[in-house]
Image 1 (spheres, rainbow, N blue to C red):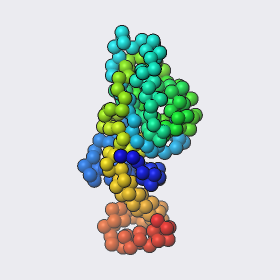
Image 2 (cartoon, rainbow, N blue to C red):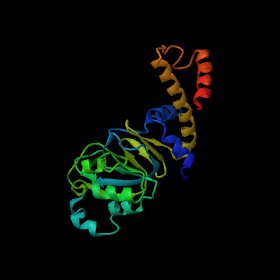
Image 3 (cartoon, rainbow, N blue to C red):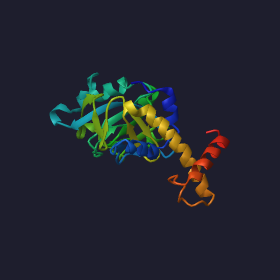
Image 4 (cartoon, helix red, strand yellow):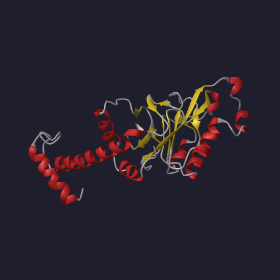
Length: 238
């Protein structure tokens, strides 16, 4: 399922918190990737379809520096195969003791038009990556090469990233709070619903800033709230 341009544009204006609520209404509780953080507080919002890389524990005889000479090495191949507009999502077993990648590989993803990169491990050269202006999320900085602990093994298969299930083609949304995974089949309806929720939350925020109490306002249990919201939308063109 290809992500529609309209859905992508809507998601870029919606927060992960709102999407999490929309998913929770449908019974999804574990779609937020735990313990990953943006490398830069000013990086752009991340939206794109997941393209995955899975690491397993390294076996020393199979994970020497020489493996990088192989053009088919899964880490190197994933960097060159990740489609433009997609998000590289790495399962690093929630282990940041060794890096998932560094600034050279992340820069290559950026130059190829990839939307961003997420790992539940760590990045080396993290300060350099932060300066790229490229959406990137990790647990914490990590200098050692991935080869010391991680063995790249599978490309574009279902993975777990920070305890969240990620299937190839799922839609990834990342903001300043973190990263959430939207099942591909639900992306359009989640974007539509969250768009509406965002409009209401913006209305509520304005009312609270004007001194209004939340009783009857949030949630909208007072009928007048809905009348006022409709009038607000008309004025705001939303």
